[in-house]
Length: 328
View 1 (tube, rainbow, N blue to C red):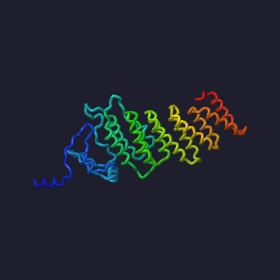
View 2 (cartoon, rainbow, N blue to C red):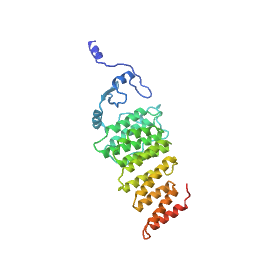
View 3 (cartoon, rainbow, N blue to C red):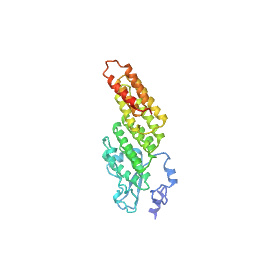
């Protein structure tokens, strides 16, 4: 009896909780006592062989990172979709599966550790209704636990998770994740190129899900990123413009954002000395159906070119093609 009394004296909090369909929730009074509202909290979760208890040990972020490096190669011990009970409602009807080739377009050191965790998250998103808290917990664990000291490695990890979540948005109709990706992942990408790729992915999924205001925010962010290139890096500037136009050329944008893009292209065309790059800008305006603007810029190039220029015939062909196109 005395031993039982001593163990009782060690108890800070005691209550009865019940597992529901969405999981187990800490009592509100305990949450208020232990955790700050906006604080991310990490736990080490242990289930002994007897399976008669669940032990959660609170960890600091640094402790969680160190522990994950030790055991991170192990997939969380959860039932796979094939092992779930007959009554479980995983979305098997569509036979959906992760598209690894689309997520991991750049190899990075922790890829083999990240993949099984994202796979387990995928099937939590796939359940009906989706286990969002559980799935996002796994995604957050991935974003924190497999960071390295190398910015490029981290940028590749972030991009892979961005592409994974965008696929989740599309496959399971979860457009609210778009804002979370933009707020929580994209700002951490310390590579201009991969940062821009992430924004391009967000532009595309926003247009697909008809989040047009969001897409405009992302487009302007891309333009800001392009403006950050030195004007000597013409190849990078043009590649960025081309990738953006490829995403938006078949979509009807608002007049405001269309004119914004048009004005940016004209600004760059005017600043270029190289005729090849000027022509490429004009062709992008043509793709966006700004035919009259494109024609006038091409005409201006023709007037300024010396008669012996090897570019004369190329510009003439461009003018003839533009002249035959209807004005938008």
